[in-house]
Length: 466
Ligand code: NAD
Ligand code: UGA
Image 1 (cartoon, rainbow, N blue to C red):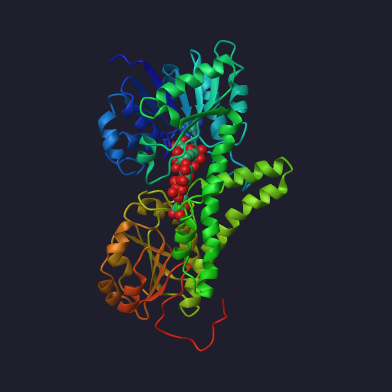
Image 2: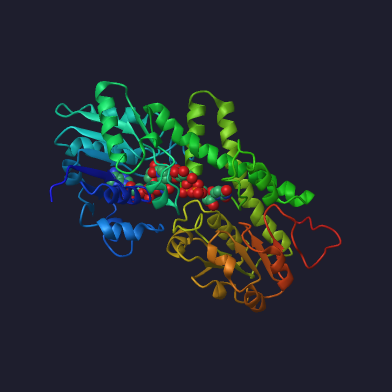
């Protein structure tokens, strides 16, 4: 079959894979090639067991793979064949050298740009899809402009999908953002990309801007989202002391149409590969620009999140009579949110490690994320066990910690679970998804987030050990 155009994507991860699958699905006239240095990942994209779990993704991939969607490790021919090349490589926080623990590591981005330079045999449009430090397009351009033969136009097109709803977000995005230069060639390239998205996204949802606004808007959007969670989470310890209810607060605050009701769900702390790293990226930028006060403002979002995870863990130990040593603790949910197998930066990782340090016997259950959970805890000193069955995880356990808001956890037979647990039995609901009053009636000691606990025992005086 003759295709109108070929699109390549460097990086077959949580963004590259689903994004390109949707482009291929919505644009049958284009050939879409996704390439990666990770041969195992590519192998899985070509199998029945995709490396990324997202509701609706399997069906889309099944429809287009082998027709106009291809996964390959052959980076050279992918670049040669394409007129438009997306870069969707990872941009993690640097773990070495200057800016360690704060600055984004752009080595993968640079490698992708150098591969484009090396293998190109025609002019190309290069699209930054990864979340990058502001002015990265300039870096990519600097590399590509060393070509004496070909011309490259670099666009910024950050991705706003959230995991767990990636397919829906891609099919019906709130907006698509395209940053370009205002030069004739910049505008022409931008129009090419607008045309691509117009295959399924209404034109009024496609926002165009200059490149730097586009790069900065992505970091800012994530900071705004995470800030809402840290703000609501910062109120939870107050609620627990004064007897207010965080869900009632969220409802009230969110009913103001100027504020809106999304992203006000209190939790054990936000996770995911991006919020923390993108905020640190922003903080690093602020500090580099000499804007320390601004940097400190954004940094607090991350600090409150660390505080919340730690607070949850310490609460577990304190309420369980100041020791969890040799106690069986069941962690319900290891993914950083429901409907994904991704565990990157999941609050569950820190909590599991801290529990192990306190010598607890940690049983982890999750419907999709056990494979990643095992990798996260590999080499960590401690007693970890894994099962897909929450009943097995909680059998003879002292406590259940709900760390991911999987729908299935709402519908378990908690009477059966309670009967099989050691007494006193504890539930710490880090997501406020369970029916706390019924659990209390069954016999559990229940500890929600940002609400008064429901305990069957009263201590004469507070325990101040932790
Ligand atoms: P990921 O780690 O899942 O995938 C990145 C892939 O790029 C990996 O498979 C890696 O092997 C590959 N890669 C790295 N360097 C390469 C190279 N030179 N050539 C070929 N392949 C290479 O990362 P992700 O979650 O898909 O995120 C990618 C980017 O998108 C990041 O910048 C992230 O901040 C951003 N983003 C992620 C999400 C999300 O929900 N995960 C959402 C929006 C934006
Ligand atoms: C987030 C953004 O929502 C996306 O727009 C963005 O594209 C993406 O980061 C990215 O740049 O990687 P994601 O991290 O996949 O998406 O998932 P979210 O739905 O934002 O959830 C992040 C974390 O916050 C999860 O741990 C979730 O449980 C938590 N959360 C979310 C809360 O604790 N409370 C809420 O009200 C909402």
